[in-house]
Length: 108
Ligand SMILES: [Zn+2]
Image (tube, rainbow, N blue to C red; front, side, top):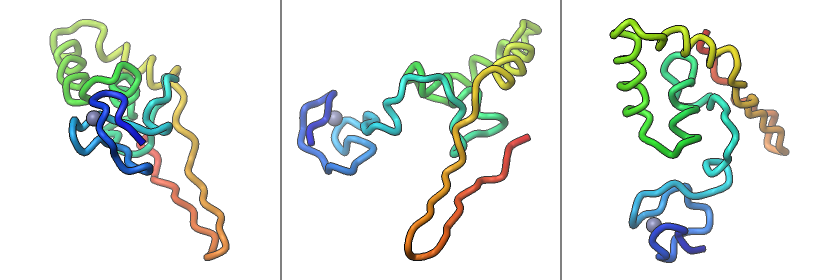
């Protein structure tokens, strides 16, 4: 398949473009605000916003942390987003090899 960003030919099952580093693939191009289970630091709120707006999660965390430290409504907003934004469904893989359940421990 082709990269949507730089147009170069990449692997069909690639999640990242090897040339420009952009995220590709259905699992990452979703446009619903959802807290991913993989890669979250606290509750995955920053990760959810980062994926939704296609921004660097570190940037989101830094900005959010500044909002918290400066006494704004950062912490309240985080807790509210934690409650409101749904968590990604647990990945349950049932195949012939054996029932493999991939269930990362909840962050809470
Ligand atoms: Zn590319």
